[in-house]
Every structure is written in C-alpha cells, then in structure tokens.
Length: 104
Ligand SMILES: [Ca+2]
Ligand SMILES: [Ca+2]
Image (cartoon, rainbow, N blue to C red; front, side, top):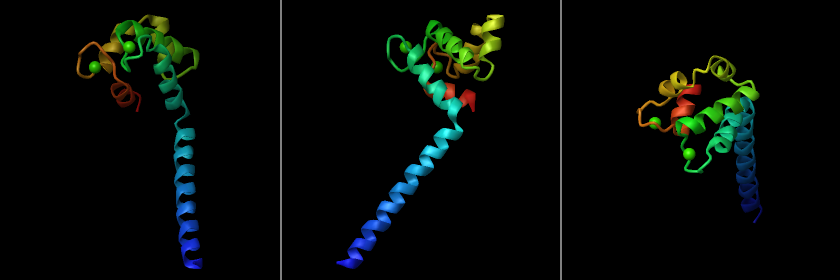
C-alpha cells in the first residue's frame, strides 16, 4: 500500500517537473510565443497559413511588439523580400514551420 503511494508521488513529481520545464522553455522563447500569437491574429481566414497580405499584417504586429527585423521590414516596405525568404517551398503560403525555421 505504502509502496504504491510512493510510486504515485514519484510519478506526480515527474509530471510536475516536466510541466515546469515546458513553462521555462516558453518563457525563454517569449518572442516566439508572441510571434505564434501574432501569426494566429494575422491569419484572417484561419487556415493556419499566411498569404502575402496576411503576412503583411503579421509583420506589422511583430513590428509593434518590436520583434526581430519586423520594424525594418515595415520601414523599408520589404514585405516581398521577407516573404520570399521565409517561403521555403515557394508555394506562396507561409506555414508556422517555415516561419519558425526562419525565426530561429
Ligand atoms: Ca490564412
Ligand atoms: Ca510555403
């Protein structure tokens, strides 16, 4: 009986620790979190991918949050250049994966 309790407690501790680990990772990637948030906001039709015009909205949101080079892209109107760089498979749509790969 007591042995069982120890095992349950140990499992609960492991679960709690891995939750903490995940939280710590999220905190260190605060910008990433914000970019993911902005990605959702910018995705007007909610298909999980960004078109060129949805991308423009994302960059504007990122610029407001002072993330990466977004402010410069807005300032110089370099949306096309940025879009083409991030769109790794050149299908005219940005997936979160393409975006994360670029932001890394
Ligand atoms: Ca979309
Ligand atoms: Ca793509």
